[in-house]
Image 1 (cartoon, rainbow, N blue to C red):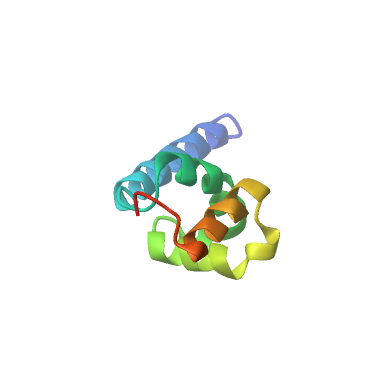
Image 2 (cartoon, rainbow, N blue to C red; image 1 turned 90 degrees about the vertical axis):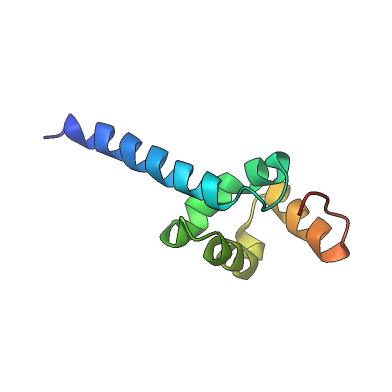
Length: 84
């Protein structure tokens, strides 16, 4: 049973990642998504695969974001984000 747990975890991550990638195909550039994906999993995993829920959660947790992800949201607020 304990050997099965890592395999189930990997399968769940792949499934969630695939669903999130499909749902977010028009949400930011690949670089922006890469900057915020770790924060999304760390802080807002309960909202995956709902991209709107994840984005709202990340905005609420802005003080907890990594510097790279904070920069994405700061760019978005100044209107200089391309590809959105």
